[in-house]
Image (cartoon, rainbow, N blue to C red):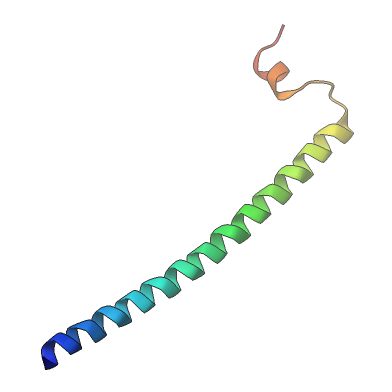
Amino acid sequence: MFWFLLFLAVVAVWLLVLALLAKKLWGQVKALTRELVAAQSKLDAAQFEAGSGQTREDVRAPA
């Protein structure tokens, strides 16, 4: 009985550690996504202000 309870305690600790790591990773993913969206918005604004008159599709497939 003692070994079974010890095993359950070890499993509980590992699950807690994995949950904390997943929470930390999720926070980093959210922050990275937020930064990428902000960078894309800045890029789009800069391209709009530059007034190139070409969309991305125009650049890829010239007439």
